[in-house]
Amino acid sequence: MFQKLEGTLMSMQDSPDTRFRYTIWFDYTREAINAIQEGTMLAVANFGSDDKTRRWSVLEVTGIMPSHFALQSGNSGYPGFVVEATRSAAQDWESQDKEATEETTKIEATAIPTLLEIMEPESYTDTSLEIGPETNMAMVGSRVRVLDSETTNLIANNGIDKKEEKNLAVIGTLARDPDVEILMRIDELLRTHFAIFGFTGVGKSNLLSTIVAKIYESTQEPVKLVFFDMMSEYTALLIDQLLSEHVEGRLLTLGRNTLPEGTFRYINALNGAPKDTEATKQLLRATLLPKALQGQRKKMAWALLDFIKNQKICYFNESKSITVYDLFFSDDMVRWAKDRRQTKTTNRRELAKMVLRESKIGDYKKARFTPDLAKQIREKLQKLLGQPKHAEFQEDYANHLSKLEELERSTAEHLAASMTLPEIIDDLNDSTRHSLWIVQSHNPSELRDFSHNLGNELYESRRLNGVIDPVVGFIFDEADEFIRARGTGSYANSAEIAETIARRGRKFGIGLGIATQRIRYLDTNIMSQPHTYFISKLPRASDRTAVSEAFGFGDEMLNQTFKFVKGQWLLVSHDATGLEAVPLPVKTEDANGRIVSFLEAKYGNA
Image (cartoon, rainbow, N blue to C red; front, top):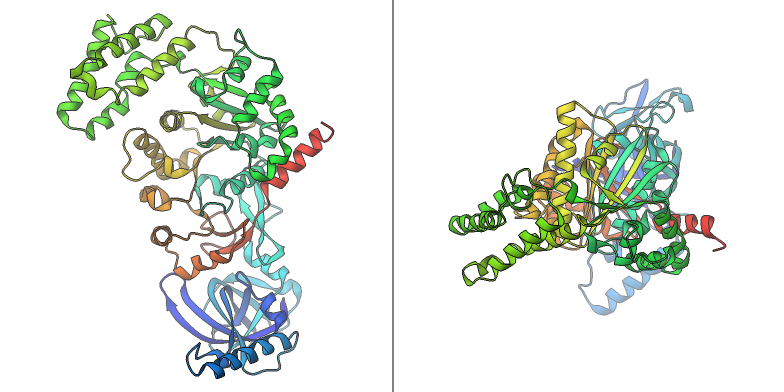
């Protein structure tokens, strides 16, 4: 149960974030300074002990610092004495390898309670060990023991039954101890929402790819995931899942310009389509590859070729469902009206009505687009916008003109890869298989609007029909581009559906995942909803403040993330892990390594 290392509980203070904050001293050795790190689990006797049972409060180390008595005064004093004392301290650090011989050196650790205790009967055996809720506070002055890996595993995964519980994934290991696996309940991760926060370069996309792979590897029940991919990077980062026999993987593109023209023509079997190899080359050039995968471009090309040939790329054909009314008088118009002067709003709506009257459209709430109708409306709108009195609306109607051009072409062509909204909803409600949708668009506003339409359609269909399975996760990378505080237009649309899912999606099996580095831009009503968080380095004080205020974290918890290397995260969960609301420094697998292994296994001789 215990390692040989022992320390002493020197003090405890009240903490609004963690109940108590403890200070522990250990005798310094180089062996000890390497064995005791952030995340190390400790046991200290508490006031609940009696003659029959020894009760040990379980603490988690959140900070560690070697301390030398000769250095307590810092750099003040006579320089010669200070330098000599510092050099003497360095000798003390080096000379104490496995045995402490100097009283002047200590290891000072800070720790927080896990709110668990170990009950050790007087006649202790391995089978008699019990773990339960903490019954009393730790005793200052008591000896502190370091838990071994086996006991730490029991603490970190407290209450999780690997034999009985389904849909468990090993999300990673304890950062300081690879022998301690961290289990996660997949359903709770998705249904109660999760968030990933970290600065540029810490590996947010890499972690998302790993989480998705772990979900599909581990869950025994169908799971549906929808990625809103602003940077077009998840085609590569999830290529193994997209081509998996166990997952129905699709790349859904919005707008014709999202794909290279040759790729678009090939997947839709249009005249002038290039050969499959050329279509693949164009797609590869448009796909963002991490640096670690740049050397795998040839094998990635073969993977994308399979991807194309297996008809994994779809084109969202809005022309099959959109009406003239939808284009000009959707909810976006209503929200837009709240953000502009009423006179301009009225004039803008009148301009739209003028276009439709001149186009001689009867019931424009039912009228669907044809090539001629789209062209006619586009030309009328361009003519009116060219007049000086309507010039102020040119920017407002730029997206309408672009969409009309696309509708004009898409309604004239038979698109073999077209996909409608009802077809996507049917798949998300299909409980017979896993599905992975990666949604991309060259137009960020279009991606935000689509997330609103898809999310609202799914939510309403499930609400009206009482459907709660299978679980669907809506995942927003670059989340500040979707759930921005006080956003307008398409920003308001995507933020609205994200808030709906965050607040009410759980009871209908719809979860939310967000990842971003710009936390201070997020809508606080949404960012405080996730029950599971992965946090890495946040150098901006404003971002740390936003996290602290939303989740009740103290600075000390977040400060340990500054020491993290890529792949290490501070994991905190209220539902999905064994420790409730206790931060755990974890190390996750490298998604790039997984992709390389997949490509080499499948296309090794290519």
